[in-house]
Amino acid sequence: MYVGRIVVVGRNRGRIWVAYRVSSRSFPRRKAVIWGQSVRISPLDDKDLANNPYLSYNCIRVWGDFAVVANGTQSDIVLEKIQDGQRPIDAIVLTLLAQGFERDEFYTPRLAGVVKGNNAWLGIVGKHEFHVKQFDLKNGSAFMIATYGKTDFEPVYLSAESAAEIASCAFKLDFDNPICAATAMAFPDGQGFELAVHNST
Image (tube, rainbow, N blue to C red; front, side, top):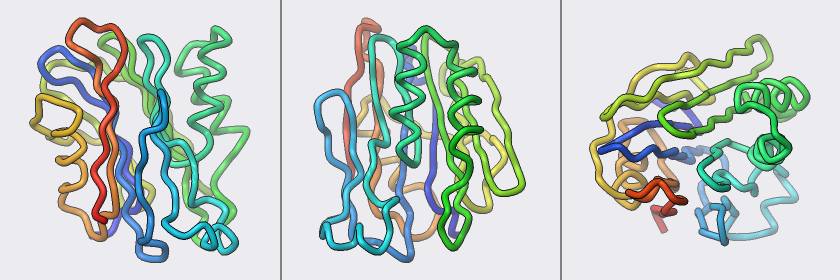
């Protein structure tokens, strides 16, 4: 089954985390790169940006005890609104409503997620849908949403103890065309996040 881009929020062993996976049929030549306090998705060949401007973006941003995950540039906007003092759910709602779905041939939905403490928020805006929900993250729990086919929030199981293991598990989710994956997982003391990526190339 092909579901496109995947956003996941979860909590393992008391550590909250976000994960992101790129699945792609049209532009498989991409990678995830850690850059400071963020993870960026980039094409292997910058010339691909001329064909699709949505190929390069920060999929994960972290700040203090917040981690933001998204399938586009909305990750930056959500984090900026949180930094301005807005609640995570308001930051997601306002950002997704303002940006709407991507203006590509598939009307790709925009996804966004945030974790803080034991709470998580997920949102999606598509051509004909808009949903945002808050979750209470218990140990061992995780919830996902994807751009196609899995556009309702649903539980998913990723058993891992580190950011690298979460990224690997996200990459190996049983959906077609995995390209790369990334994770931000809170450190055991809750101070900041450990970043990791898993690339197919």
